[in-house]
Image (tube, rainbow, N blue to C red; front, side, top):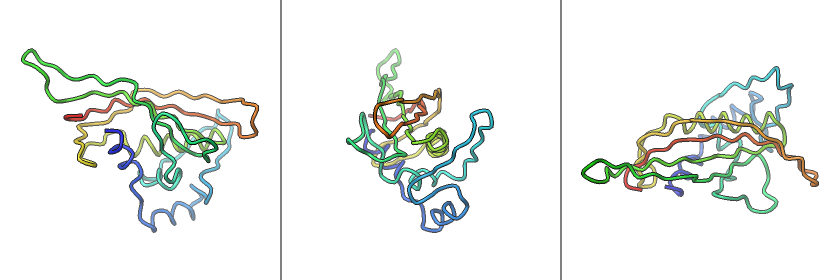
Length: 167
């Protein structure tokens, strides 16, 4: 499931979509940089194609490479429960996947989270030979890392319940 999920998330949008996002001010060549007071928070989700424009190929499982640029996403499979009936397994697996969306501003982390939600929540289909029965957003939280390094990071974590068949 891990490789298929990243493959689906990184599907490259058409050049027209990427150009339109950059020209509309919803993105920039180095990612998205939106800063605003938390009490005036509003980010408009453009399309699911926004995600690859924002993070490029910076989606990793368990940890990012040292010095990775932001915005980026780190995925964790928190649990995987095999569905059972009285007569045995159904072949379905319910996985809880945490997606940490990092950005150098609150706005950029939130924009990546909204793009990820638009791309993944409600998805069903087959990618990389894995049959996704459904993916659903079930939780969200924000955090800030005040580290000793100059690259202070903001994080929005999204929890998804992802149902797959046979994985």
